[in-house]
Length: 413
Figure 1 (tube, rainbow, N blue to C red):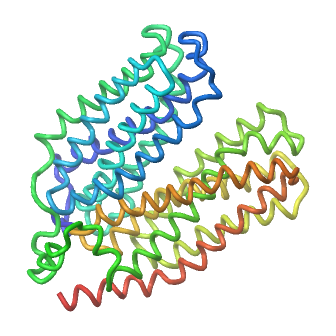
Figure 2 (cartoon, rainbow, N blue to C red):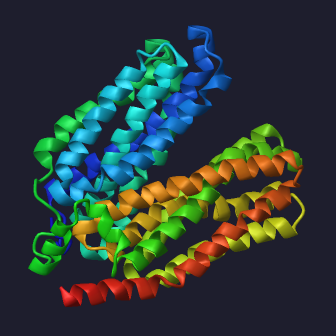
């Protein structure tokens, strides 16, 4: 599908809505395990403390699927990877509802992560290709906003689902939804291999690689990918540091647990608005400067927390910028990939980028745990979050040079 399309047809709009549905399903699926664990002690006699690796298995699967399987969409077409990934996700999520041991949950969540990892980078890439060129990053951000929507729906609907179907319903609902999506997407999405028409030399260059993702490690794409992946990693580390420990850290600053939970929710919700606004700016203005402003505002907000005494109202506003900005970064950066890489490489770039982001994400929670264990004050804990944001500011200054690399490569092709 050409990214140069001038308008949005009804079929395109329906395709984008269904692709957003995959992200909604992912958000619901991610929340399902966390919502089920407290109920499994009574239902199956399983200790909640033993589920740490079950949560990690999903992250490992997402990273491995994104790096090893998703790039095949660049070679064989997006529709096949999206529909197959969605179908396997549905079946494995249904399988999770049949688990009775921690090892059983671990295996099913690993398979679910692999399938989602294979599917989601192709969903992001295809949403960029379906969008008008002037709105690539914005459309990608709106489609990926389905994740927080799914997270919210899971939390809101969980009591009714459990009353009706038991804890198993938390997996039966997203599993069935994924299978319905797969059936709907196959006739709606157009088949075809990305990048057709980008030039014979470019197509031959891609075909020479036994694995499409290997092209990212060679000139001229290594520098743009390093810029893209480094920002993903630093931002993911910040995001997981904050989302893992914020409800624990804020009560140490004198806030109640209920107030800490509300502040965390409001700060994450702010990320939706910031992400869409920043994506619009990325599409219509200077891309490097947009990211400098986004991550610079984050760094400034955490520095202001570090320099001020705890105050619920002030800290809520600052955390809306800081935590919301970290969530927004996860929405905006895949949109940047649509400008850094041609269509024939987009699934590879996003997929391998997901793996790098997961590596960064793994660093966040242990760092927070170490700071809590060493009795770091809450304002100092949050002040540390300014450092990854500053690193992203420095890397964002290299974005114009990375964009010029793509322009030079396409000129040669």
